[in-house]
Image (cartoon, rainbow, N blue to C red):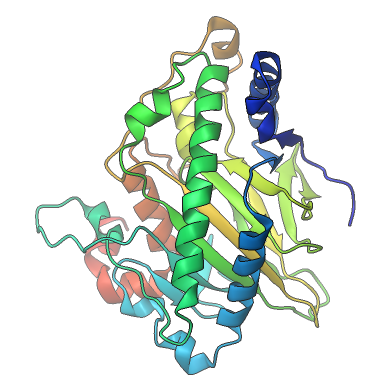
Length: 336
């Protein structure tokens, strides 16, 4: 594997005294202002849990097709469950991957007066043929939620806000875990594993199968590789954090190029986002930081909303047009 093209930060510095913690916060602020992406080590995630996640992910994708299709996402109005290869789109183009989407385990909202984004609330679809998937997924999410909260408190201080800023305004997090497999392709040109996009929420922690590449990040108009780094997560910020900082922090375009046959690749992104009804107040940045804020990106094809529910619904309707057509034709029509 090539050398990392992104900053590498060590979360454990936050537990090594005031000077080390201040150094980490400065590195964090620079990395997400300049790049929007970085590698994160020192998270304390047990290697045994990481190995179980990897093993269970492989076991899920090796299930007979009928077992996976029994929980296909077209059966869920909440965009949960299994997506077959070619079943998701980015910017209108087909992504070459299969996955299972897992969110907070909640009852569906049946109030007709609920906001549109309430369709994203509901139960998950779990495979009967692999009951251990639920156990490992929930344990993984618990660990990463703790890492995410620790990062966000450090960010708040780095941006001149109270340490509790995100805790106060997040509400009950609307997380999303994707367990993804990118099949190999034999095309003469790189194929779209997932197309160029920005994440719609606040924070993403990505686990990548050791020794595998494919993730690319846009830097200064060029695509640079972000291969896996042992013991590290790839971390990036989403559009809500760009919005909350007036563009001082940057949500960055990224994509995945399909591996070459006979190889494939497992990756597991975890999206840590606020409650759907949450709207993060714009942070009152110190003058020297505010002077460097670039403003929120203005793209008519991809408006950035301050309300998380609107941002999340926008993303899901676009990514899964089959689910949207089956369950939410009215929402699609109203946004046409």
